[in-house]
Amino acid sequence: MGAGGGNDIQWCFSQVKGAVDDDVAEGEGGSSTENKIQSHSRGEYNVYSTFQSHEPEFDYLKSLEIEEKINKIRWLPQKNAAQFLLSTNDKTIKLWKISERDKRPEGYNLKEEDGRPMDLMVEASPRRIFANAHTYHINSISINSDYETYLSADDLRINLWHLEITDRSFNIVDIKPANMEELTEVITAAEFHPNSCNTFVYSSSKGTIRLCDMRASALCDRHSKLFEEPEDPSNRSFFSEIISSISDVKFSHSGRYMMTRDYLSVKIWDLNMENRPVETYQFDWVFYLYSVVMTGSYNNFFRMFDRNTKRDITLEASRENNKPRTVLKPRKVCASGKRKKDEISVDSLDFNKKILHTAWHPKENIIAVATTNNLYIFQDK
Amino acid sequence: MFARGLKRKYGDQEERVEGFGTVPSYSLQWQSLLDMSLVKLQLCHMLVEPNLCCSVLIANTVRQMQEEMSRDGVWHGMAPQNVERAPIDRLVSIEILCRTARGAEGEHPTPELEDGTLQSSASELSIVSSPQGQRNPQSSLWEMDNPQEKRGSFQKSLDQIFETLENKSPSSVEELFSELDSSYCDLDMVLTGMMSGTKPRLCNGLESFVAAAPPPSSTCKSDLAEKV
Image (cartoon, rainbow over all chains, first blue to last red; front, side, top):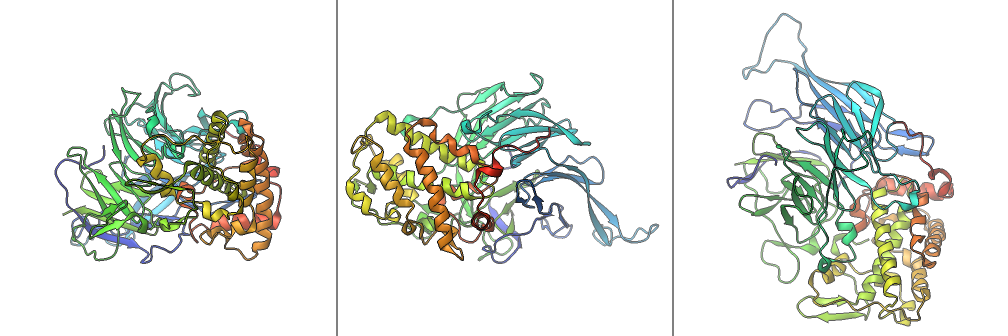
């Protein structure tokens, strides 16, 4: 799983970047990469580079605009001084190279006190554009462990690309029915296995996860494994269909487990057991999606589960009362009935404020949480 | 539609369940959900690029409800006086709908058809299409310059949806898909209602629908050049 768990962590506010007003509707299509720690204080992040990845496009045939909004970003493993990342909007994937260059004339080797080269210039250049392979909206990209290929998934199809080749991709999953009237299920997320370069999984709106082996056949319409938890008939409601849809799936580092997120729970699956998850973390009020060990929600709350102590904590990403090193106060939501002091009633949650993306630093207890217009960094005290 | 968990007053069809507050009757919930789903499906329909996942989930839910209705064959508690009520009163909050599933003990009352046909439900469904029903103050979708035109289009398309639903066959909902193209709105919009002002795309789509008013099927039926 992601870094985290283990000893009790006290999360405290580190920094926030972005608009002061979270209510401002977003409109930028740019993508800022805030990933490198600039020397000075421990864990403080500063903007490293900002560049526009995609521009809006107009599809004349369908007479509609393709938004420049980025759906996914994936970093490639670093092989040399430069960094590479894949970014995608609804229809087009781009490979970007991000490199540092000294602005000063060659021959000098001046550095600042902390070892940074002076006059650092960061360049982002598009290296590949992978276009015209998706009829529907791209929801996932995942880089293979061979570091040569990657997959891209839309609602009904998954394509396999070679990073060097832009004019063709291989369709490896196609769940589009011959007759669209028979459509009852769409692909919601897909990911390559971290170690086995022939294996990938994809999740569906019906709450299933399919594991596929590309060696089995060219078109992986038949899954090798199907992970699905049978529905508990006593829990059946009007919304059973909708809340079972899986919004995200992630492998553990070892590849032995995977984690899925549906509307009301996060489930950990053992790849050797298809009929039910090994762990389930339930939420008692409606949530929204997208993360590994922590998960985002409404009202700018996010929630973290400690898999060892089985305890969970709800925190809020907010500019209010938060200075660096302020320990975050756990938030509590009460569903109904008497509200205790400091609790928030579920009725006063702001469903316009959602945390859609979270990420954990690969090595340290530092987390990034994205609200509508702000990026928050929190770290262990 | 339901921002911030606002509680709505629901009609007299509610039962008091010990410890869980008031719980509307199963039929009221069923009807509300059906109305809501139809409206949302229709809204998806009107977008230039509807969210396929959204549409699939809602359509599956509606299909399920249809099957339940035709399987059980009976519908409980559909009083004729429902016809008078504006739909806005019958759209209960999501929380109420979820509450029954979680909290109520015992089984749901079996739904019964008043007069053995879908007529009563159809007549109630048609209420949703009335201009009154669309004036949902919370629905930011109706933040438009010219509500008159939009209402007309909405009415027309809703009728199309109702037609397909009236003919009881299980495949009727599928027909809705034959004209869907692909794009996105949040799943949030399905379950928490349309957000105010944050989805300019939505308004654009609706404006273009009215302005150009091409039949939905004209451009969307087949896939474009699918290069693999």
